[in-house]
Each structure stands twice: as structure tokens, then as C-alpha cells.
Image 1 (tube, rainbow, N blue to C red):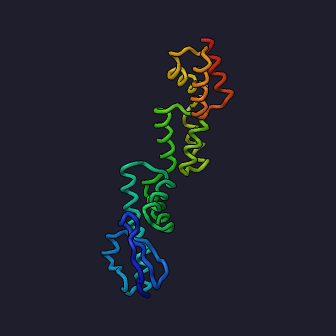
Image 2: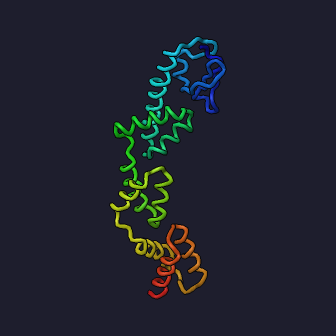
Image 3: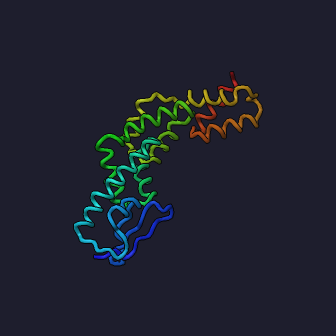
Length: 204
């Protein structure tokens, strides 16, 4: 077998390797140089397996740890990030599985931290919080488990946020009421609950 093409990707940090004119794998530039994977170089099956199962997976693990150093991520988020920088799906999967095994990735822990931070910094409905976690690839059972740890009363959350944002305005003014309604609906609260909050604010 022979390497017939080695082309850098858009950010010049990864190299796509073709063997006998067929795509084989994508590898970081430093590993490409270290393993002498230049065009026209002969490569045997043993070397190819070593690169796919050891070199690439190790490189993806290390890149994953660097990503996690800057920002906590769910398993799915890190998987997508590794794919985004150029690692193949199988390599990204193996790397995230390993990082999960050693505790660097933990979707249960991530969901708990995420909810704690979002509840502290932004008033959202339970539905919106669940949607955000689902969007990050968190499994339904983990979402339910994390949500059960927090006593979230949508009505109290919505009322508190409405008072904070619109308490100084005259809620009898239809335009103010409409703005408040749009604001709460945008945060994921139901029409029924928003109407209840508006009634409470107008009556107080």
C-alpha cells in the first residue's frame, strides 16, 4: 500500500491521508510528520492499524482534554467538537468513551452543573431547561434525574422574573403587559401560566 495523497484541511492543523487513491484517515499535522506519512511512502497493514487504533485515538484524547480544560462539555458536545476539528467518527467515539471511563466526561455531573448555573443566572421554564439539555445530547433519564434534584416552580420563577424586569412599570398599560407576556413566553413559560402571572401583577 502507498500513500497517494496527503492534504491539509482548512485550518492546516489536520492532514487527510489517502492510501492507494482512497481516503483512509485524518491525522494532526504533528503526528503526520512524526510518523512519516508523506506522499509516495509505503505503508503496511500493521502500521495502518497502529495509527488508527493508537496514534489517532491518543491524539483525540489529548485534544479532548484540552477542550475540557477550557469548558465543561457533554459527551455529545465533545464528540461533535472532535469531529469539527477533523477527527473521524470512529476515533472521536473511542476518545469520548475513554474520557468517560476515566471520569473526564460525565453527562450526569454535567447536567447538574448546567442546571445549577442556568437557574442561578437566567430565569427559564422547566420545559426550556429540559430542551437545552436535550439539545446538548443528554439522555432523557439523566435530564429527569437532574431536574428532580432542583425544586423548580415555574410560576414562582416567572413571577419573580416578571417583577424584576417589569415591576417598575404600570402593568395596566397594554403595551407593557404585551412586552412582559412576550418576554415570559420567550423564556418557555406557557400561555396559561403567563396569564396567571399577569393577573397577579395587575392585582398587586
